[in-house]
Length: 230
Image (cartoon, rainbow, N blue to C red):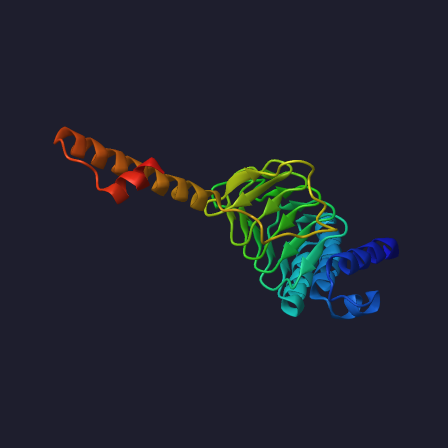
């Protein structure tokens, strides 16, 4: 137990530049407190002491602002940064070395029975405000961008961006988020498609203008002709 706690505190030191010492992290970081509360609640849950499990879970929610259902399975070295407003459902599973920011929901859609919540692989980054809803898997080393709404499986070494989220493959070697957390260079595929569509429409309009002028034996203005060639 103490070895696992020491691992957890070390993970915070590695990922959070504001963390000064393990003692400070242990005493003041609500993400650590939430995980400790959950370990106890999950023990009660597995031993069918369901009332005690929920009671302890609600105490953890009250003190930390982080709600983790006692039935959820949480891996080792989970780092919860800031943490306020995080909700993790009963059948959710979170792998090792994950990083979760505030406002994240690992929830259900209300349409499923039994396994209702997502399974998160190892070394996954879930940015602030993201919603992962449904009984599917998010692969190892995946990234979920801020405020994304993920409703289907995310492959390993990929990013999910947008509402609803779309998958963008990461070229080359999968990043190690314990060493580098990059949330600013994620491109929005929807914005890229809209930009490409807008450029395509401009080109079509220019071609139509050119054909209209040719049919009537008119010449394009010199400025417009030069622009057309470009």
